[in-house]
Amino acid sequence: MNILVIGGGGREHALVWKLKQSRRVEKIWCAPGNGGIAADAECVAIDAGDVAGLVAFGEKGRPDLTVVGPELPLVDGIGDAFRERGWAIVGPSKLAARLEGSKIFSKEFLQRHNIPTAKMCGSFDSAKDAYSALRNVGFPVVIKADGLCAGKGVLLAQDFAEARDFIERAMEKEELGAGGRRILLEERLEGDELSFIIVTDGKSYAPLVPTRDHKRVFDGNQGANTGGMGAYSADALLPEELRKTIISTIVEPTLAGLAAQGLPYQGFLYIGLMLTPSGPKVLEFNCRLGDPETQAIVARMDFDLAEVLEDVAGSNLIASKLHWKPGASACVVLSSGGYPGKFETGKPVDGLASAEQISGVKVLHAGTKRVGDEIVTSGGRVLGVTAVGPTLGMALASAYAAAERICFDRMHYRKDIGLQGNCLKASRN
Ligand code: AMP
Image (tube, rainbow, N blue to C red; front, top):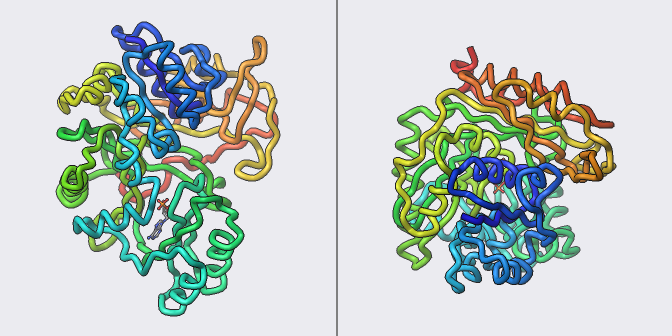
């Protein structure tokens, strides 16, 4: 098989790394890829959001299978563009990708199919109406921009002034771009968050191993929100009873609802959950894998990813093919100092080979590029140091030992990945 992977971050490096291990795979292209992916695949200089450019590449390269990492090309219809041409692709249609591309669509979908979620207090396309609605809600309230906003579209507003300011910036000043022109208000949920990700061909589905990520930049969940500073996976995250509840109250009604609306879903579906005292509730859907959760998930895969994804694209998924390494995995993100605010790039990265000598460790690249013989930083999140181990404690120890061997100017990473989350206490010994 010749495979095209779309994207250029740590998630895509993880996918490329695993796909390359398959005996069925002859060649992998990655558009656009990065400095680390370049060692495992042929990088093609096409932006992941450039659907027309990717179709043009498909005409020439004729990949046997395409795997889409980020949401933007899916929301813009790459799934349809490839399938119309008879090219196998893993990723939902443009209409189904609205589960991520429009929070209002997704909330209405959840309500229509009685799937547990935070109560919506209204959706608005005029700032004036949104301000007046604020007078009738209790605080804190959650405000969500409808469209894609690169992780900046959600605010947990503590009071009226904060809420008004966010709505003004989103709807009047258009600081979030087109994604902020409509907003919704919803009740705030409390509890632990959990990511539940499935892969489905529209009929069958298979859950991936449970993961949790860390969004804030500093230890103790302090500082600004980021794309994700680390993630971990351990079976203990998801007790069997909870797993059954999630499947019966959320996963199956979601797939049935999509099919009933004529939107059969094919690809990865990421379900962000809040584990509330009254049961798990959906916070959000993503129409693709998470980053850095993918790095932790891929590290535990004990099956041929190329074969399974080919089955997904061919509507032939056999869930029992997905075997997982027991134990746990962890991914610690090494970021540029200053991220998610301003940061410098072009810093040489040292210690990569030495880090990978630690057993069970793989260093996955996110924001790097190759300059001559050197790897230099090129983004906010630079590397995802990923490790597996028989227990979460051991996976974390390996990932942190490897992280200590890597160095670039102003490198920053959290020291408490995997240490939070009460479900984990038992599994860390
Ligand atoms: P979303 O993009 O909808 O997942 O929101 C991003 C983050 O905002 C989530 O991971 C939660 O931490 C938080 N969040 C979203 N919706 C709610 C809610 N209704 N209650 C509490 N926190 C929320």
